[in-house]
Length: 413
Image 1 (cartoon, rainbow, N blue to C red):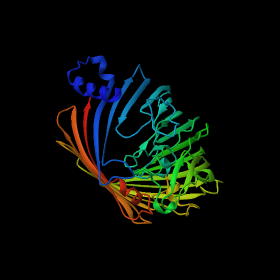
Image 2: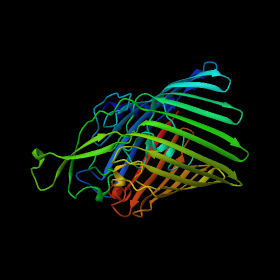
Image 3: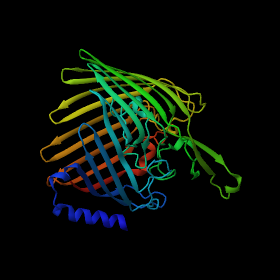
Image 4: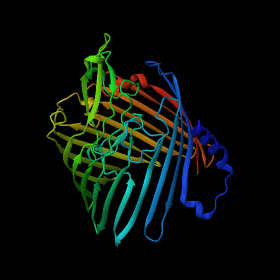
């Protein structure tokens, strides 16, 4: 009860809290959110709620920058006990999480080093990018698809039209999956026998992470890029085993563990502005000696057009190599081939967005819509919905039991 009480107090008191000029380095929000589902699934109710308290601090002494942020969450559905997992390596999402804790220091003009905990994003094709698919994600709520920050060291710089980034990630931050067998489970119906009961094991992910290098250059209207990466793949491979001692009924009871393969990858990217359009393309080769993971050649292409204070983005992504296992068990490749269309717009009164994602192999998908209304400069109300549909053998169709509407109230500062 402590977290929801803190959230309510924050919502009530922040409108009356005086701020000084020195407090401009602080920002954040408090949010209350409610969900209504289309069906009751395996004892899970028709409704759920959550509360979030997020605070961020930024400071710029000279040319350096310091940033720290912390998030506290409360859910009406079962969650872990109040804990602090700064490395984000546990099976379940911690109610208290460290989002940022990094320092950026200048090394020379146009060159700097950054170390600590921060988010990394290299993808050019929004919606799906092989450059970002390697990075850890939190699928606790698969409709939000949140990236996880990394503990890392990054060096970056620029000389005229040439740019570079070198990243060392000494600790693996694994993908976080929702409880298997829940309404949010991303495993398609055809991947396992029907009525299977899953029991998950807490497995320790390997400690070493990955290293990566990215080179970028501008030539006329073209932006060109090359990246390489090698190390532990943070998306797990699920291991299913039958323990005879657990088979007490008609339904098979399967223990599920996680293991992590090593993978090498190289990618190229290309983009340019063509009139009112932005064209982007990426191609990546991913190599692994793991028999279940296998190799992949993933290509993506996207076109973007601006409309006032908004944009329409269409992305097509595909894998030229069939995976050796059911692709929904690989998570980062589960949707391929896929078509993603997203339109978001900022209005004088607020904002709205529409997103349509289609898995082209099973013709399953999800339609998402959201409208936000700015009641004041600091208060905002948002409503929306997520509508997965299609074959349950696809990664998105398997989420039909999670169809929902939601309503959120946010106070920012």
